[in-house]
Image (cartoon, rainbow, N blue to C red; front, side, top):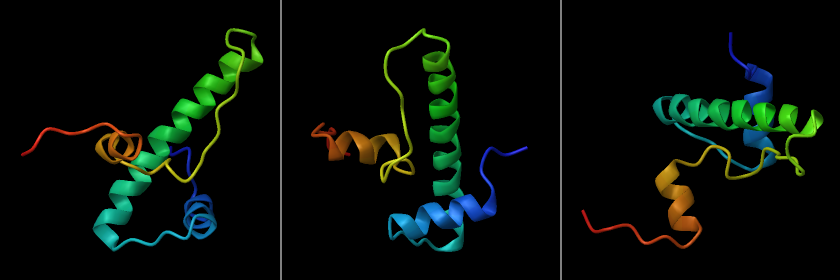
Length: 79
């Protein structure tokens, strides 16, 4: 069972003005689902006092690791 409903995925894309073709949409949704699972797991640790800060979904939640690294200033080696 997925953590992400169709409605939630649609709302996320609308909130952050995102739209994808069918194949990319599936890939991006998978990335979003992984990000949400990480947020849920981390925030359960916050609720039990194991960590001192909460995580949340944002406009980067469906980025690939490479896109995220590039956005944050990491230089990728030439291909």
